Image (cartoon, rainbow, N blue to C red):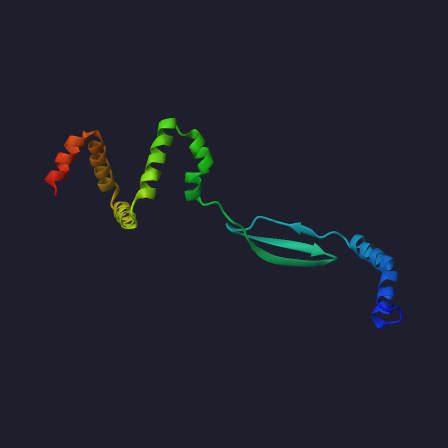
Length: 151
């Protein structure tokens, strides 16, 4: 930058007055009263809040996120995992591995059946659950016999 150029003169004026700008900034920062906010309780999910700064009050509704009771049922997955017994953990690992190895069309069919099961009445769901419990008690040869009957 040449000494006589316009940019040099402008830079000198700005840099020369830099301490004044800094002092002015801090004076404005600390001279104004701090902003205050009040959050009174409103209706469920909505709270009206007021912010007052330098004698001016701003009010506006504020949406507050509420906890979903369905999410509380599942809780933190890490905590659930810590509370599980070792055999439950192993069962879950096996199920996850089986799910990962399933073909996409098998996964889709499985999900469709689950959706159908969810739409059944609680009595019908219990009936199906009982049948599945009985199925677990069968030996592999008995299972094969049942499969042959229903093919």
